[in-house]
Amino acid sequence: MKLLGVEASQNSYYYQSRYRQVADQGADLYVLNGIGTDDLWPADRYRRAGSKHVDDLIQHAAAWHAEQHFDGVLTFSESAVVAVAAVAAALGLPGIGVDAARTSRNKLLMRQAHERGGVAHPRFRFVTGLEQALRAAAEFGYPVIIKPTLGAASNFVFRVDGPDQLRDRYRQAAAGIDQMMWYDMEADGLDLGPHGLLVESFLDGHEHLIEALAWDGETYLGSIVDRVTMEGDTFDDDVHHAPTALTPDQVAEVHAVVAAGVRAQGLTRSALHAEVRFHRGRPFLLEIAARPGGGGLDHMARLSAGYDPIRAVLDVARGVRPDVHHFRPTTVHTAAMCLLCAPGTVESVGVPPEVTNADGLFFLKIMAQPGDVIRRPPDGNNILGGLGAVGTSFDDAMRTATDLAGKIEVRLADRRRTR
Image (tube, rainbow, N blue to C red; front, side, top):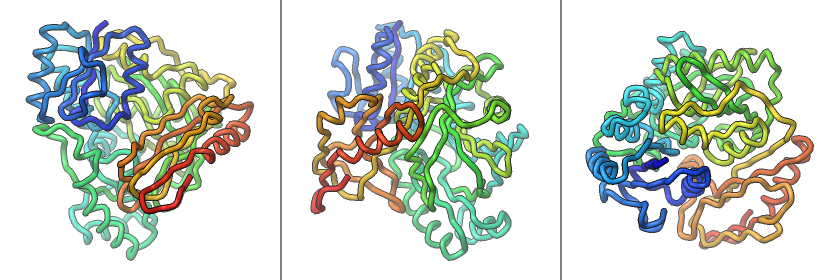
């Protein structure tokens, strides 16, 4: 099978390891970037359009398709979901459609779809100024969440506990979203829906990350991961555990709300990443993205639930039903965390062999390269990388992961070392 991976703007080397997974599963993978480096993928299967305009991406993809006869188009990037839907449609290849892609990318359009579909979701208001934000927060009651409509990775997502804090956070978010990398990496020439800020009511319970599949009217929960971080007013999303501690009845409730969201967003055949949060004992839908989750969630899915999100992506891309079943956890405990460091410019990252060769390590990805600028809330939400470990219990796996993370040394320009 021949598949074409697309990013309008290359997200450093973040997806390189996933491209390798696709190739390891037997696909002949070609990669087209609008703008990118010259060394991301083998030269005979890699091209750059020299522009991130969707028309140029389509033109280059169509010319390459005429030569290679691709079976499908795929992406792992939230910022390329709409562009890939447009490319697939132009090439006559399987895809989710531009309308469903836009609804699954833009948080306002997604919320409106959930409202029309009767899906449990937080109250929301699209705001274009501080006074509107203050009125929405007063109506919903504090705390509230403020978030971008076209964000990702919790950039400029804040919990706000009162009017004075909202004034500060609104100013920071409104100033930051135009420079946010996830917005900047979008293809030009696409209608992405409103670009701005939402105020949402706060959901007070536990949160879960789900790798799922939509296929011809059925929704399958491939894996469920529990978010175990003690959160503050920003959302690093940095510690996870699987398999889930949810009861079978709660899993059934989660399945129902995710399936309703899938229908509301118009998704018929897609690999999915869903986020659900409980509120007063009921699951509410935070989002459903039309791509697999990032970090080590694919590894956690395979180990803790026997589901492979990467395989699902390549099968869906070529119009073949993936080998999937309803949620069936294993007995393998996994713990994973984002690797965080202080803000600054990365000088070096040192990973000793005792980390890379450690028993129990199932995932280690250092994303930051020397020269990269790490921005932390309220200026952004960059992370150093991710790490995951297995164990006989969550506590056992977490101890291993924490110990290994503490051995990674980060040096920032004009700062002492940090970990």
